[in-house]
Image (cartoon, rainbow, N blue to C red; front, side):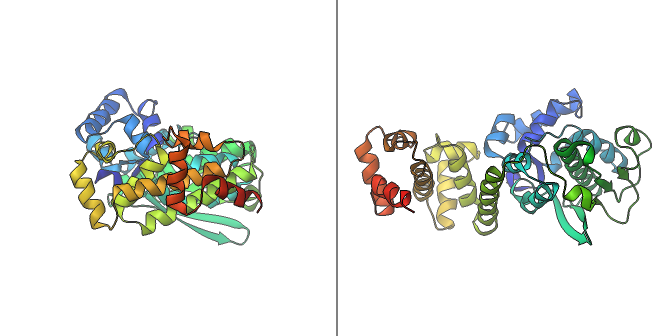
Length: 336
């Protein structure tokens, strides 16, 4: 389905639609495509889906490398620290530029449009960028956007201390690029597309370090990456939706989000060796365990958050799931 195609991260794409990077006519064409394919801006954000790159080819049918470079530059100028879903918290809370760069390992969690490969060179770092659209102009677009967006975000985090440069394998456009990105920061006609991060920038401290938030986010990203790599598609998507939106409780509501019938979703999950009931239970168990580890939250509060109006029913359910009562589970972990 389109949600699994290489594309732009949901929130970043929605922000672009209301920015100066996308003209109003093009934005309306994007919205018409979304309506045709059974989604919209809010649904994209809620499911953290990717906006497929083929939508860009449809809206810009004559897109070539020069236009793609210009569009990539314009879009990169709109990049925000909070635009990239699960990567946003660790991005903002990173302690150094090196920690920011580490987040590229988890890029597949939010987009499959571009592949990055880090290549340490003495104390400096080179990050190769390769578009995965199988369309030269679209590859130019995503390489330009990804590279310059990362430079913009690093600039925001460290200010004038950033000396990151982008080398593009594409030719320089006839006009406009040098105004937004001076030649010292954006270099064209390179052998391949890459970012160069000097050692003095790599070890520069960021403005908003939060080591605990960064470490927790990295753990969550690693789990998400492992789920993405090893979990069948429908199972992964259902679990992601259940984890992100606790109010979703029925197979019909999930099927509606995926623009399919509940019988089709049930059949796909069965083919992958699971069921909606099992996935819902797994999601609720994990959520209950996490909340019970917070001593400031009462067991009754956890029960209410999971939709149980009766504490006894929640206690019975939790014991059925885990083999111990909520109070016993909490007591065991308080003494560790």
